[in-house]
Image (cartoon, rainbow over the protein chains, first blue to last red):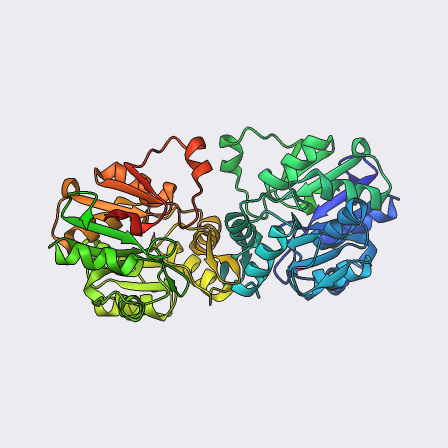
Length: 260
Length: 260
């Protein structure tokens, strides 16, 4: 078996690329195993701040791809690392769920439940409510800055789409009159830089494999990675005709990364 | 005592104009009494959907201005009347508090707690949460339309500003990708048209008195009412120099509407 591309670093989007819901994409385990046994570096990328890196590693391992938390980069980790550079150990208020709060605490931030903070961190939060919106407003009125995990409008689930982080960002921006300074998740270069640093490879020696033109492929091209679009997720072959974005390689699914 | 302006219809903004919090503006009771005894028609306008018209009437009466609910026009009433023209008795989902829900029920709407509706009504809602945002998304995905009470970013309270309807509107627009079709409160002409109809006077024979250039005065000028800015609320004399909007008359407070 041969791997179609020569690069040393490989970054895989998860949902729609490596698995769909609870089902592994056929052959994804063989592809990852082949890359690893060939000495390539493999990492996994997710915009979702709802689960820990350990959760993702456990899921991939359960689906047949042995993975440790260190192989996973999600928007919670990226936000914590990015903010640790900007303002280490700062007091923060979090519009977000427990896994993000845990990641921020592990990175040394003081997570507070009141508005006496230097940052309001905004994430996909299924416990978002008026009280949190008000705390964010009071914090910004006292000088706090805004940063967010991911720009997604909705999140696909097995029951359909549900509101994602864009709803929380828009509410906070509207009442404060301030704009979020950075949204670290895809398609921001920030998440890709953190992922490349984790792999220890340069952009020029890396590939990103994903199912979304506007995030995975756009972001990869902007930073100079090779880009592989798989049609096993949200993008259809027809979509390619109407988009100006051209991936370096288009495959039906990840299994086709291997040539028999 | 003489009234400075000859028009028959008088519309007064409330907070910052007639009262501030729980305190009547000095002389406001004398002004209203003088207008009424001279045969003028007087109405009160509020963008807030948090209280019923009866609540406002009771408060004004308590403060020394005898008022009935029929003298008050707030954004809940305006929304109910406007929507009753567009889609009478429609099933609606409400992001809003009990007084708005009551007003909609009184106007014959079927207020539902699920997404099987033709309209999502968005208002200033201190019980706003993720579940409501999700219901709004599901409703819009099934074809529901969006309408809102008021565009205010924040609401002043004795404890400072708190998030107002703009936060709820922004969240729903961001996750649905749809724009609210109408925001009926100030500065929309819709609220002024409802108020003028209540008074039974034409715009040309009416005055609006308020403390905000961007809402009360802008809206009044657009519809051809005479406009009176009072400096007893949010607008300072300095603000007039930097705004292109020129009220017909600027007063320190409503008491100055009377000439001794």
